[in-house]
Image (cartoon, rainbow, N blue to C red; front, side, top):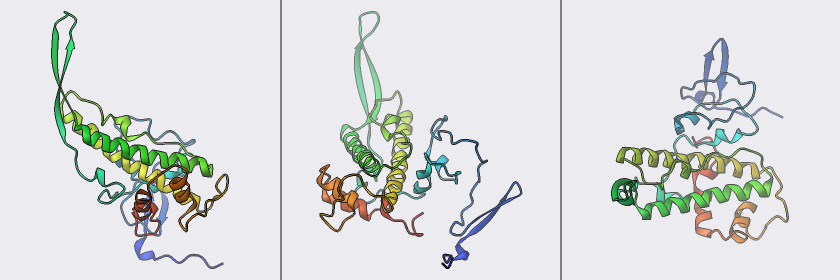
Length: 236
């Protein structure tokens, strides 16, 4: 079999510590990490942010999906349109009884309740898609933290803290986009458990989510058209 043809004009070579690393389709500057004896949890570190997951890592079974994390995630269209704008942050006042027995008031800052609900719904959808596909196809892999683990739905002591946690939660949806993209890509070479769903020309995972888990056709169609399901070289 002839080797695959690459457009070498889009590639680059990196020399690091005397070793040459070559990529046929990446021209951006990258940092090659030291090879680890074992694959540690990439999320078990202080000051998490998505920039930590936009550089190459050594492949491992549990964290193989990291290579699908989008460098330029798009939230302008369905199904991620609810995430395309910075949500409103409002002041909320809490009343509570202090140690002295007197009623005290405290001001906090949080996302508007309507925006919280939109984000919660978005998280529920994308995490359920991942859970269903992972089980149906028996795909191994470790889960990333959920966006809500950064408390976008909580009230915070100051406006800057609230904004920081909301921004971090927003970025984390992109991590989940990469995770789901990896799972969908894996379905192309795996056989699902149970009877394969041929009820439409859409992929089995689509039909399974549509008819067995009651996902809306509009939401699933939007997912199919998003970068999550785009696996060509034009998707960064």
